[in-house]
Image (cartoon, rainbow, N blue to C red; front, side):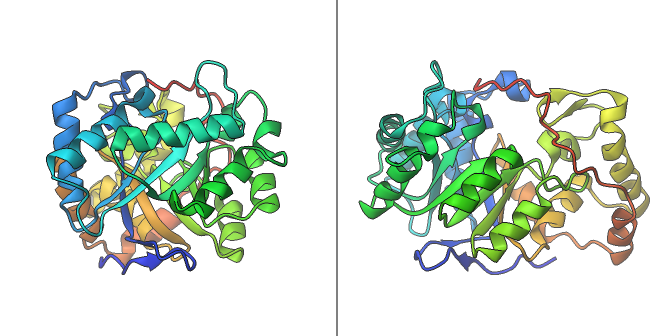
Length: 323
């Protein structure tokens, strides 16, 4: 497969490649990923991304309670500055102790992000996880966190603004009421789940650039369900992993890596402007690029299309942790 050319987000001047690298695991979040990532490994991974053909990073203020952005900042300093063409996307987050998410908290979140990464602005800034806030009302009310997000763009602190969340039922009213340049959905548009399908169509109709995250279902399609018995960051039963196993059987029959198929499922969809892949070590960059460019026979796609996909929320029972 040939990865398509970068796309401009509306008329913001931000041109994003089809591949983006997520940095949540690089913030050292063993509660979520079951493994630790030390600072040196994280920094070397970030530097490898920034020097690659796809220098597009996605982070958040709450990934690892700030460690992800702190490590991005360290990598930028070791490189002597942000390389030309590099793109940073991060997110405004609620207060992780009180879950308050008002305009003041949004402003503090951005200030902490800029300080941690040692930059004066970011390319893309998303409002993150409103479903986990104490209340959506301080986010959406006049003068609330979303209005503050628009002010940040007007002030030149970011070039494009977006919404990044999970629960589609929470996201849709916000997408309907406010104007965004981008949208991040995660774990809800994969080989086995179509929960975000109607939301993606809605966003495209509004000319919002859709960024699809977590194509590997939290790692199962990248690592193999036999040895990695988790699905979207939760311990998984045989029943939960059965759809993954169905994909793996088709891939084994045709001699193709499930990770390649999972990634290309998102990359080949013309509605998706960019796909975010989480990685946790430098050699995963080259592996991701190999998967993105792997030749996959049409017979594989035909067989995968015949598999059932659920439209249920895959994270309905997830216990969220920022660590």
